[in-house]
Length: 223
Image (cartoon, rainbow, N blue to C red; front, side, top):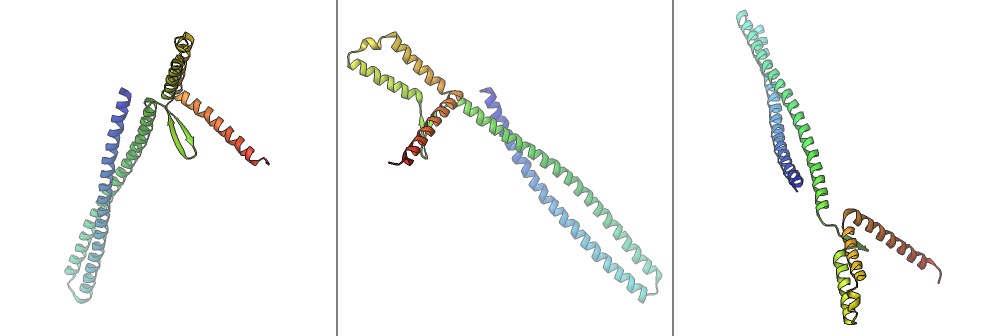
């Protein structure tokens, strides 16, 4: 029971961690998309600034004879260009760092998902071991659960009642009769275990398949 509780608590904790991790990943993806939009916007602004400044520089070159104004415009363009390039490189480094972090988080999420699946599998195995086994008889598409201990107990009760009615109490008090009843109950308890249930299903499945084949051969034979 302690092992089962520990598996339950670990699986619940891992599922909560996976949910929180996926939430953080989605938020990081949104932030990265916004960052990419900002980078593209900065690039577009840089192109527009370069076009305007180059146009102004060309105009000043052709229309103005003041060399100092041309030099000032050129230096302004270079300064703005260098500043924007620095910002773009910084944003690219941040994006690379975020991409690496995102890949690590994805790897951790995959590991958590695998651990969650394994925990659910082991949890179902523990539940199957703890849950009492019962034989299920299939008739067509219907499944009928059979409780062997209850069926055997009811049959023994009817047999004992019939013997008492017919004044055969000496048979009821016979040690061999009581030993046979005890053997029946022990056998039914053994058949309720995992291996016993599998063995019983194989035996009954083989009998049902053989009876079905015999009915098919009988129906195919000429009358």
